[in-house]
Image (cartoon, rainbow, N blue to C red; front, side, top):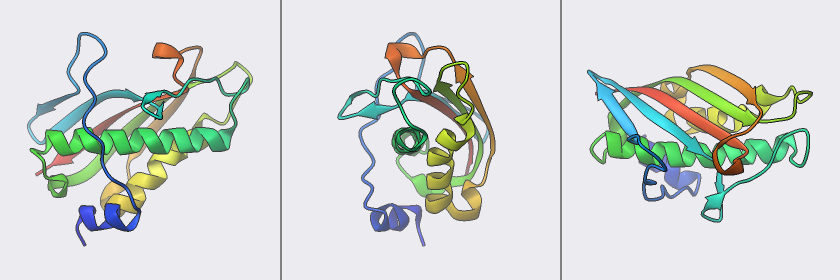
Length: 152
């Protein structure tokens, strides 16, 4: 089954790739490895603002991380020359979670992205991962995630 069939089954349409918000590119490639810049969570096209442990729940965070994963897949598709089926492996995910000092469920928030990569890419979606709690993110976003992938 192609990754596009899986996206269709999940009723996911990949959005247009976002433009960089500062002085960087959305992806860079060296050899068969693609590095995707951090993508912030968006809701209704705007930054999904909030802080875990203050005004957001872990379940809301999983939804936000899933939304980031969809945006990351759109950028990954662009990095693959428009063909997501060139993805050989999601190698590494790094997640930054805007949270108070006593919030300790960053790993559960990040599962929203990790689980979606597993659903779409199967075994190829299993990846190494880091999840960090941070005091703030650009534009007040609740989650930012970056990704490293191997492509054909």
